[in-house]
Amino acid sequence: MSGRSRGGSAGVTTSRGLSRLSLPDLRALHGALERGGLGVPVTATGLSALGLGRDAEELAALLGPLGREGVRVALQVAIAERIHRQAPHLELVWTGPESRDSVARDTAIVVRQLFAGARRRVLVGGFSFDHGEDIFRPLYEVMVQHGVQATFFLDIEGHASEVAGAEAHAAAQIDRFFADDWPFGHPRPDVYYDPRTAVPGPPWASLHAKCVVVDAQRALVSSANFTMQGQEKNVEVGILLDDPAFARNIGQQWMSLVHENLVRPWPGRRLEKA
Image (cartoon, rainbow, N blue to C red):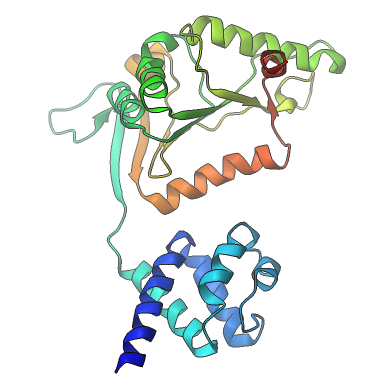
């Protein structure tokens, strides 16, 4: 009986540890085990070969001590839990005229509440701005009060007249963002830009995605820019998801651009650190 208890406890602990993997990753891992493509004991090297390098060390620590049957059961439990768990909470977010029967939440209110509720990290990707002092004040306040870290990915308006001047053009645009839309000073968000958006074209490139991720827990994906038009005048639609798996995935998607040097940091950051 005690052996079964220990095995059950280990299985529950491991399945919880597997919760950071997506359902497709869990199924792929289970399929590899069944086909013999995942060796036992499970190692970080074996997991990396299956495309799970980001989580390989943690997963190897969880699954390594288990035999083949233990790994199979743990994966099956994690898959079953993922399938049957409560669906993520979604809310409709809206800018524009509303009927009396509308159940949507106002874009401007949602954005400010997201910022004010952050406690660890905020990621902002792709928006345009024209009244940042108003909309970013709640974010600045939690950065001061709670040490929240913020990372922005900014679209660069226009482009340099020649390739050699692309970085200077991007720096000038980001400097203008700090002057016009982040007048608070320090602490400041870490800012990145896609270098393709600053070079002369064609073909033209734009950092056009629009999303906010808060604490790897909640994510807003919206058509509305952080402008007076986008927040108050236009017809805009968005989805607010309270779903850690999705929030982590979209955050990792952005940060992978940083890790692989596909986006560049604000050039002025080098001067600040010098």
